[in-house]
Image (cartoon, rainbow, N blue to C red; front, side, top):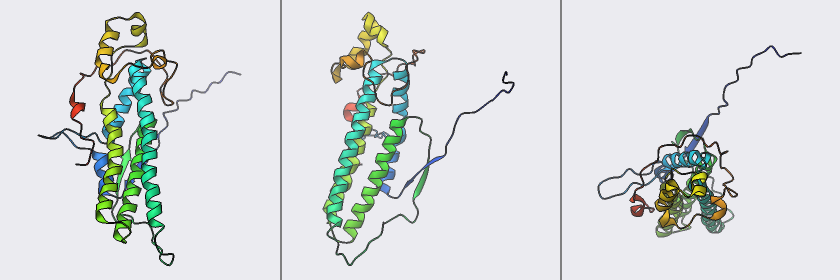
Length: 245
């Protein structure tokens, strides 16, 4: 029996909200615009925008976009491990608290709540890192407040966590859409040569990525659509400040 019903089902949507309790995490979220004498620092929103550009480039069969997605996925995993090291250090510090004393979580009386509009899984993974950093900062501040660490250690550990995230965002900031696809590299044409020159400072792209046999776990399907306009390649990344403001 023929189905006489026409179903018009819209796209799935889900409201996602991020809550931050510390100014330190909020500063990582916002980043810093370029000012006189100071280069810009990419924030989480800028990182997600870069991830979207990479994903679009990877869907158009640009091997350099695939390469950068792989590098960012690996960097996210390394960043997660680096934050866990700081967290473990805090576990050891908090274990010094006398057993007769119980301390609850320190939470902001007025946290900032931010709606998230993220379309890339690696963008969400970066958000998870930011929430981890926010929790680490709260634990560090608490440890200093109750006299388990000094102010110098407090500042050093907070800065250490911030550098982990800023290093991740700084790597994303180096990405540019190459304007070439794998067919261009197979033909060894002018587009491929231009792409190689664009990325020559980063070394040779691994052969398995160039051939498309290795892609990020979160790489999109290849559609081979019309290429997006190529962004101008700049040397601004050489002046990136990946430390604290």
